[in-house]
Image 1 (cartoon, rainbow, N blue to C red):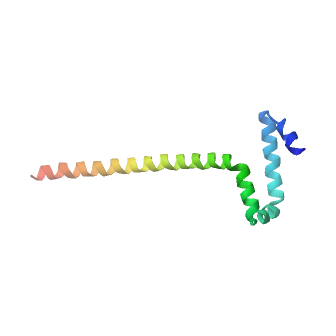
Image 2: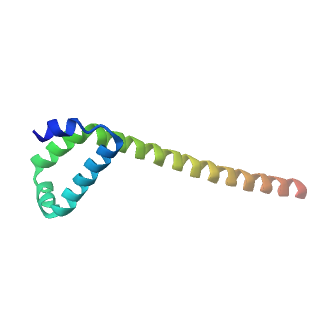
Image 3: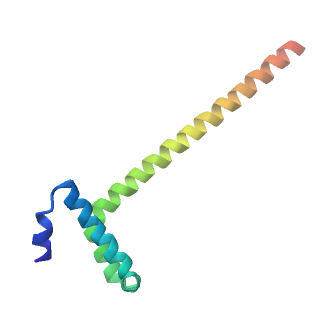
Length: 95
C-alpha cells in the first residue's frame, strides 16, 4: 500500500517532501535503525534494496578521489620538474 502511494510522487517538491519525511523517520527512530543495522540479514536486505544507488555514490566518490589525486600528483610532479630544471641550470652555470 505504501509503495503504491510512493509511486505517484514524481514532482521535485513531492520527492523533496518524501526525502524529508524519510530523514525525519530515520532521525526519530535512530535507536531502532541502529539495532536493525546490527542484524546481518537486515543490512543485506538494505544494501540489496539500495545497491544501485550505493554503487553510483561509491563510483562518484571514487571519481572525485581519482581526479583530486591526479591533480595533486600532477601539481607535485610539475613542482619537482621545476626544481630539477633549476638545479640543471645551476649546474650548467658551474660547468
